Length: 246
Ligand SMILES: Nc1ncnc2c1ncn2[C@@H]1O[C@H](COP(=O)(O)OP(=O)(O)O)[C@@H](O)[C@H]1O
Ligand SMILES: [Mg+2]
Image: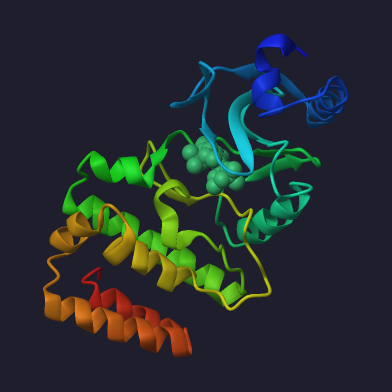
């Protein structure tokens, strides 16, 4: 391992860390085959560049077996005992072709495919043209439909801004299955529509790009209620038509 522990301790073991905890975590990294950590990403902690920081983890770029990956380190103040449950949820998503590919997990670390791109909130700020926006929204709603059908509720898609990444090649990827559950009624499609049309910072831009009038929006809300009741492919398609995505 070529990790400068003094430099990376604050990211691996954020925000507070004992010697003992750090040692245990370094052993876990060894187990995952992590050889190196890289200062890449748009976020930072104390001047150290990282991919992102949430309530549960700090995500950094790591190298294992010669390839880059995204490594999520459980925060020491997270209200979760382990990331192994998130790994299980991500496995279910991966089986549907959704989410970054799971590479490995231990109690304190989740190693996944690195998605190089930006969070959708920032992607919207770059003014994608209407056809790009339509393609990304359509792809995401189909992904959410698959999750709904499989009974996996992501749990945080009404605040999708930081939980969807758009890769450099334009592929939308849903991340952070930390709050996901197989035991709730799935609301992925409805939550994402709420984000696109109402709650998200980009809602105005979306409504304008799709050319939705107030009457169209009211119709979409009715179609969403139908979808909630039935969640069938036919009701999804009606919703996509209502959104002028087809
Ligand atoms: N596989 C990944 N590739 C690239 N960036 C990622 C990846 N996973 C997470 N990130 C970045 O890290 C941030 C925090 O990750 P997230 O899983 O949401 O942590 P938390 O559970 O603490 O909220 C995300 O918003 C995203 O910007
Ligand atoms: Mg998060």
